[in-house]
Image (cartoon, rainbow over all chains, first blue to last red; front, side, top):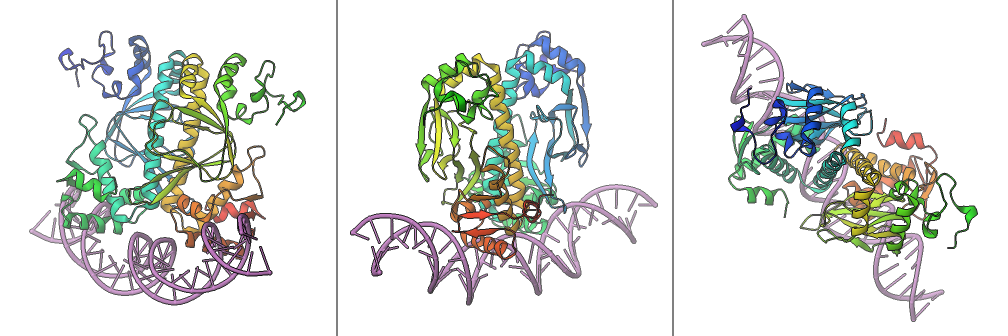
Length: 245
Length: 245
DNA sequence: ACGGGCCTTTGATTTTGATCAAGTCGCCGC
DNA sequence: GCGGCGACTTGATCAAAATCAAAGGCCCGT
């Protein structure tokens, strides 16, 4: 897609911005926003865009990574598995999240696209060099880590203490509030995860997830078509069912 | 306690180190290790030691914090509560962990001493200033955040996918490997948490925790006296029961 | 030593969600 | 249009953990 000046975002200084970066959302919420035009140019010269189809693994548990990436659009599942195959999704990442683990080579988890996803990949060496040159970049990565930590801890409360109904409602709420990186909350959306994925995210079985979704539909908390498309008449109601004060 | 030169650690340059810091473990695994003697002196002038008895709240969910702290010894529970009182412990912190949330005023969780605990408190303003002066400090805080994120995600797998027996064994394994900051793993230790706390950490009830501990004892995975003191004949066996490959 | 309170254990019963087992729906290729 | 396959739903039954209930044990002060 060719980007012309009129479409460029006005909230960041755009002169001398590499063409590929000019329209990229990752420069706003994402990590690239802290870089100077020079640094951005440097990074963009080494970065490559990739499209990933659903189910395709980006990085496997225990593998070594030689690159980081920004999510341009789509959804990525982060998961862990037990030796006997039990699986838990430990996080979802949306645009413009940064993926990859600074300061360590080996990944402790598997990252896999949940839907068609575009990412912008950077070689580890370039990011590591930029981190040492631009202190603002480490600060941004640090903030992203803290955000993920907060999300992980919120989800621990969901996993440990909520009922199946509350868990499913909590999941729907997360999706409603994250699926569209532009506006805050969507009252209608396609689920980026299959029932099996939702079960792995919530620590439930697919049957329980399905039953609870059916029950939420019968209680008019949500409306469903196609089993993937959900609309939420009242966000407040959903939050309440999810046990979020 | 008075510290004389002979007891000072040799692995860090000790000249001009403030007396209170000289014997402090937090300088090794902790965040102070990155500071120059000058910066350490600066920080130590504004820091205060506090002893906290079990059950005493250090910082409450939703309160604003004006200080950070290092744990000198003891154990701190980090927890979240739902509106109706259901509680989940989302993390345990041991010496020499850093407590407090950089870059945000409001705490999203409650921190409470689990046992008698000593902490070294720093005013927010001083740390924030040192972060801007010493890039190494932010790097260290970033690493601590990433460590906590890894731990949180590991625990999500435990909460979402393990059985009660595996959960209790996982908890005992965590304690065995963290209770003594000096040596790696203890094969005998006092539990820093009550049954109620363990239940809140594992997303179980106290009765289930008690029953599973009894069962692990009968299966000779652990030995118990006083209901607080535990010894572990075989760490490998415990790990296996905990579902850790 | 005695009593009271709290923490812990143990037992009986119930409930929630898992498991087992059929279906149904939608999509795609033929 | 038909058949088949994968994803989802629904139903029946089962099991794990929660809940309800009652002791025990331990510590502490009197």
